[in-house]
Amino acid sequence: MAPGNPSRMSQPVENRPPWWQVMAIGRNPRTTLVRLAVTLVLVLVGFPMSIQPILVQGISMQPTYRDGQRRFLNKLAYRFSPPQRGDVIGIREAGKQVLLLKRVVGLPGESLRIVQGTVLINGEPLEEPYLLPPTNGVRNPAPWNLQEVRLGQDEHYVIGDNRSMRQTDHYFGIVERERIVGRLIRP
Amino acid sequence: MTMLRRRIRSVGLVALLGLLGLGLWWAIPTEEQRIRRVLEEARAAVSADGGTGSTPPPDGPGGTLAMLGRVGRLTRCLTRDVEVEVDVFGGLSGHLNGVEEVRAAAAGLVQHLPGLKVRFSEVEIRQIDPPGARATLVATIDTGAREGRAAQEFELRFRKWEGRWYISRVATVRALRSR
Image (tube, rainbow over all chains, first blue to last red; front, side, top):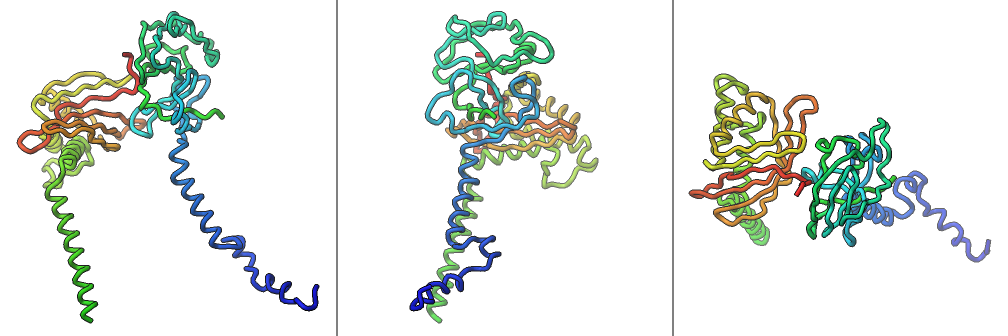
């Protein structure tokens, strides 16, 4: 300690806030307030704009996604690039809260048909490694058939991963780009 | 003192003008507000919790008179040639043509589902071009039964006649189409 400058050592000790105050609002309340405001803006504005939590209901995406699972959608995924084949997407079904979860198989401008369960894109068979064998032993995909469909410029073709279902029981088809909410974030 | 009085007077004037504006806004609604009122009338008529604001019917809120009253209120929101197109995957599908068919269907609906509650959300009046207008909305339907809750998007068309908007077409909207 320098004898000519004793106040240099004692001053910070005198101004130090009590420990409970440091725990509650930090050493500098103003900085804490700014941090809190930034966090609140991120949580209240940024989170709903970019992420949407979803609860999987139904069996059309089994066995990839099961009934009752909780997942998140990336709502910014298609802001700068279009949906890609194989993406699992959320589709606006009834308002902003009721969504369909489906996989993109056909892209704008393509022609698509299904022959005995095999999806043909512009006449070429589509490889679908995501079609896992179902646990009930039924073939996946089941022998579905669909006449040729030509997709428009803003249209995508979507189907669920559970193709062991009866074709008439499975909700699939053409979706317009404006109805696509985002891409599922893989766990 | 004079300064304070002047300030009070100017604040009072601003408040008065604000109230006047609010009154005018309420008394002279825009076309969109008129359409929204028709929608609310239709919703209240279908929904058991709609509330009439009038004298309750003598046979109670769930009685035949009350149900007829609800159906009557609904049909007052519709054009005579109203069309209803329903196509829900794995559910109802059908077509109703004319107010009489809708009246019969609505009577059956309120009779079989006395606890039916309907709520409209995300109402978007898309195109107002008198005498026509379009709107989309999400109807949340609660039948009161277990797992009897569903949401469905609808597209509606309106027609203006003698200064009042009427619903001329109601159709369900499907997210996925076959073509």
